[in-house]
Length: 174
Image (cartoon, rainbow, N blue to C red; front, top):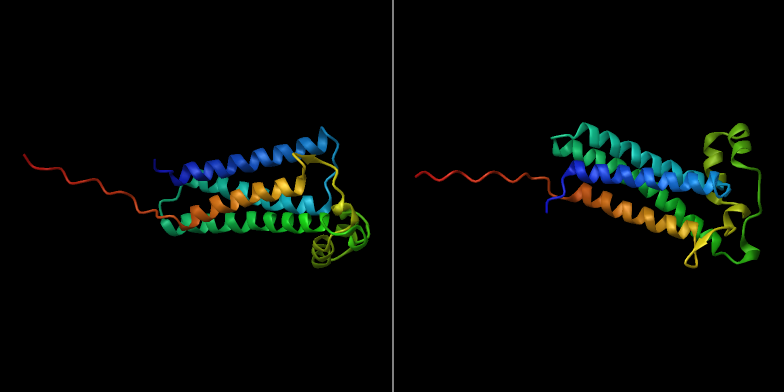
């Protein structure tokens, strides 16, 4: 079966919507407050969703344009996967090596330049090392990383696959 460009773009968009819906469910229904690293993971997921939606609606015929959309989507979800990997690493640090808790993301955004906010968030804090949700013995950042890794692989496939369309065979003369 040939998986069309538009089908895969739609799938990536739908996966992003489902991922964000689950994150918002955990936040607003289950009461889990997202740490700064969780917020940064959402940014990449939203980016993939937006890029995939635009690619789905545009449905470009040019292979170059298809690859540009796929590359941008892959960069976006790679961001999320990288932040999730950092989050998993922080959660697995020995308790004496966990960074101390600092002020929240809102405070940093109000008082620090954007570059410093990125540095502070990616350094992590004690709140990012807490495991307050798990499923099958794995924390939410582990599951998020696995989800993002699958989306990275799909995006990479979308970027590298052959878009050459099959030419119809010439009709035989009778």
